[in-house]
Length: 125
Image (cartoon, rainbow, N blue to C red; front, side, top):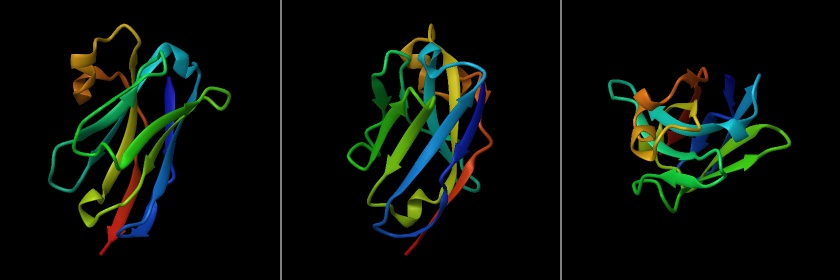
């Protein structure tokens, strides 16, 4: 599946952004979709994801600030980011994994097969 991430930009601390991950070629209902970010000099970090069933999975570090949703009609998964902090500055990626992949594997970049090109998010203080 081909993925296109969009919605990044420059925002002040405390602001919000909504990133979108649009798929072409296949429907999201057949895939688990994960969101990651990578800051300069750091490893790619898992943020959360949406199972092919529609349920979400994520990490505690961004729970309460970031939420994930899906629009089946648009074949798009969203990452809503609120209360942004300068440390959230990074390139954000979405990725797709087979719906048969187990949850423990989905917490790592190695669990995903297809990646979008990334979108830059910059949070100013």
